[in-house]
Image (cartoon, rainbow over all chains, first blue to last red; front, top):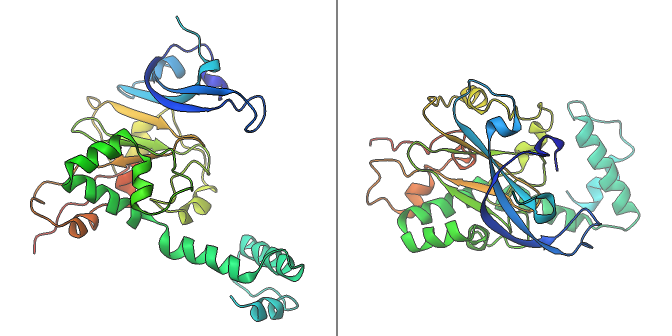
Length: 67
Length: 209
């Protein structure tokens, strides 16, 4: 997972299914839900004058904290 | 390429005009064949698949079907892997394909951050080799990147950037062009370009005849 997303606030938009959590070892991790999370561009990057845009990332549940 | 050709070429000096990558691939193939680890027939079959069976024509057929068949469109948007089933290209990249449908004022753009995440069964794979030599996509300025592709979007348009991963590949369902009522599926497929399926262009406008 790219470091620039750490600590950013996003919104879970859809469940993308369940997959083996990869950080423990290839195909060895426990099955875990994967979510498509939507972030506003200012959450990830410096504010810009590039208009409205959002980024959607597929993230494992372990990467997320409920707020 | 036949077994004999492979064997004959090895002692010869490298022909002019071949890239380092091509030469390296040929040397590797010759060595693997010599050691009996792969057959040249198997390699030929893979090359044949990439050259003839894989490419944007598969994605175009999927999109055209979705334009004419609302039930199929609903299935495709709910489960993008339907695209690969239609293209009879199962169990390759794109099994977890997600299809985003374009609507007026809300384009989708695919950002390819890794090579293997590209849904090559329905798009293409040959361009990957060229694109690896280019700088990473400038994700911080999507509007400027799209402008370089010739797609100008006003500030009122929300751009949704989808970061594709090794798990989930992405395909954009472009808007069906106006003036194509009553067109047959094959005729519509001809309007669906590769660029329109990654979001850097609209589907081609119909040409008056």
